[in-house]
Length: 468
Image (tube, rainbow, N blue to C red; front, side, top):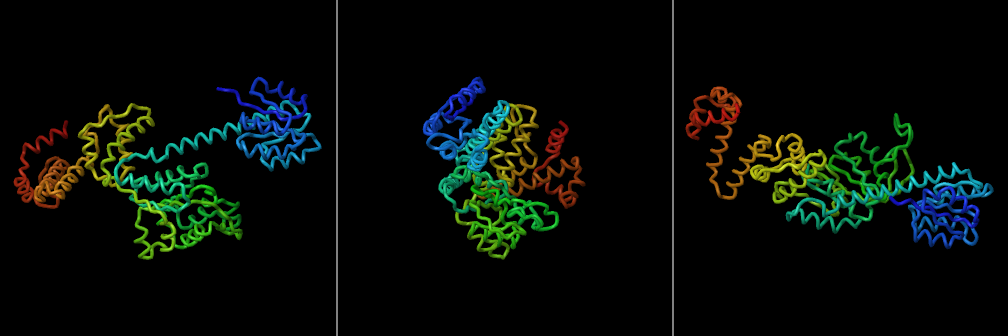
């Protein structure tokens, strides 16, 4: 790992020599004796720490500081000052200097201040690295899915990300609404600013307003100090309101005004606070229909629905299921420090036929469970949840009927046969108990078994499967 760099800017040769002796082993040193030369060095070297004398010939230290912070904001500047210019040094801190030390300086004190400045620079670099990493993670190209419905979603996200337009994301629970909201944020010029998430369904009506807008000390009982709300925390970035349909009507009115004017007041306060916030909202409810019945403000719906993104349920993009399975198998294996599982063809077919009421979230959770609990390398059909296997069969029958490849009577018979066999399994193959479970008589059950050709050997084979 390369050494950090330190720039010394001082017109006194003795001062530069002293600093060289102190930091020569720990830093790559650069030195100048004028402001103009210092600016050139900053542009070329991008030093982590800059020691800058306040009293410089020509351009003074404060003006040099302002130029340095403009061209290299990440560089931490420590002002070098004589005792009689300490007040000026305080002004320098207000202008962006990290700290100041007085001449003649104490070596240990100077080392400590430089060490802290370097630590801040490195933390800033790490923060930027993490932001870049998160931005790449939520890039449109990293969202899994190549189906036509998802391609339409990507197109809208690409077009709207760079704008400030309000976006309303709709779709069933588990379709990935927050993922799309993050993609919009991290593909915009707001990516370096906060992405603040508010789950409206998780906050009671009594708290939602104070959480959104904050409050002043004494605004209500137990308000012992000022609290900054989510709206203010998102300044410069994006505020994502999940399940916005759960907001109460009173909060909706105040929120609408905040979105339209970009101003609000904290609870118990009188000061109007100006913010620059991009709003992205999401709901699994039909807000337009809700607005029509008076359950949601119509004006707020129109204000949010500037750009609409409708996320398809997983059952409507089955071509993406193999891609999602492959993605989550790798991710969950890495998270669990285990080799990725392999899915048998039968298991994949079952998953493709399954209707996924919980959408992508349900699929992700299932893959995690299979990764952890399946003792063998290959996940077989039998390793899938029983309910999935059963629903898969009935779902496949339904599709065949709707496609005209299977008559309705055949699907009904198959469904009834499956129910009778399940009831017999649950009752230990006791026909009287099975009939009671199905809400019928033993005589009717026997008749249905004969009609559907459920024979004693069928029951024996099922019993063998259970005992095995």
